[in-house]
Image 1 (tube, rainbow, N blue to C red):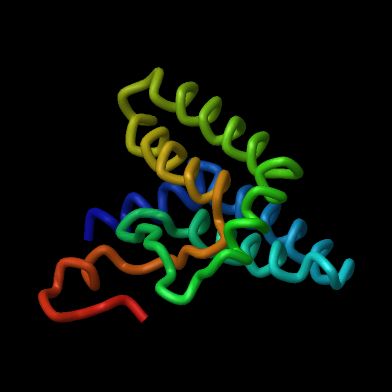
Image 2 (image 1 turned 60 degrees about the vertical axis):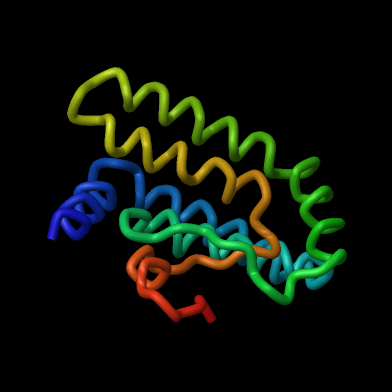
Length: 136
């Protein structure tokens, strides 16, 4: 219940909608340019994650290979560093108030996702805690 309330407040006040729209627009641009479709998929993953971050985390994708590592390097040069910097600045500014601390922490949680998104997948935290389950 707490995660739901935090996600709802994040969606309204913590810039969840703004981040998701921004990542969605970036994904559409990447899809139009065809060559950058993998970056569009990563942008959609970030939009999904930034829309509802509490109770979710990023884990390495088992099938990710060298291609995702090379694409991540290109991502860092083109977009990752300034997206990560944006989340760091927003996280610091939100942590100034006691009420904003959970939202600041959520922004800090989005930093690795924005910096190095390819070869990762978003999973529910509860799925990781269940013994014998492997995220699909």
